[in-house]
Image 1 (tube, rainbow, N blue to C red):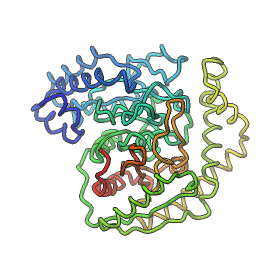
Image 2 (image 1 turned 180 degrees about the vertical axis):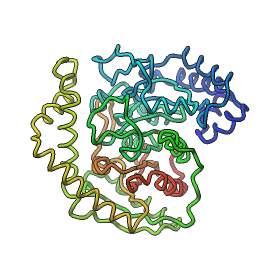
Image 3 (image 1 turned 60 degrees about the horizontal axis):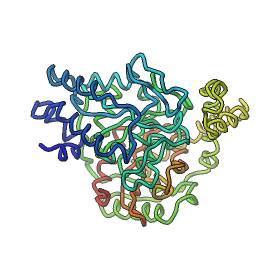
Length: 430
């Protein structure tokens, strides 16, 4: 099989051939490295690569027993996540030479399942707003989104079939939307975050970027310690609630048409489609998210910001300063309002299987000096449940547009089953 064919294979397609030894880990590794060599200068998805270590790990996988469901499957790791012996730079010169002493818990689980760790992908500075070098593979003059910029771009450009990311506001959903890939954010407390640089502890969530919903489920099972079972076909089309959200004014015409188009396709596929107007408990939740994120980020990163001054971006310094201005009482109030909304959201899921909402305000903005607006993900991240971004169509400038499905807390597999059905209704984004 040619390298060109291998780089277009999904995780689920690679698994049986790697498990049966019809395909070697070394062959897959070489296909990925060749693609990276061909495209990295333009896309800039990678912060750290050790080709010698990758080839050595692939040879060890090929010479030993099958380790698990991901045996030989290449995975990229966002550069806020520790990989033993490799730097965890967090997108900042402050940590450029900091070498991880051990694998993060999630990386250890990937390795135990046989995954081949390819390298560290570019992140924005400390997962906030200052972008790295990464460009959008669909148009190199446009942002890939952030903060999981490199992970989304690497998967979209077929450098790897899967990559880990993380989300505190919209750091998986937005780059997935802009790069036309699938972005899965797990329920916040289902996967240990040991070995991941924190930004805001009550919001930080692990996730991953892939090109197929089944691949998202493979990684979910491995990372939660479950046995992987292929997603089941739904016995009947799902109940879906279309939600413009309280942030609808931020959606441009492309984003609005995309949500309408998605609703029409889902309804045509047999889904029971209703319209959801968010209840009063959801009013002001974006502001709650901003307040909580700033308060917690000030405590997580304040010492780093104070110690390194001009090496830290103005954006991050402003975040820490704003967080220090949030009182304990205001923080507690925001957390209380969040808890009330979480309970209300549970009642909404009594009458629907998933909420369908915008994933971004529109196509990826032009330029690489900013990463776009996370406004359509802040509330869902705040409420801690799973979400999955799906590509739907292309916009007026030819760039990907999508939606996100939001599920019940701890209903991650059920959401993946709904997403697999929903994704089958869209076939316009290549």
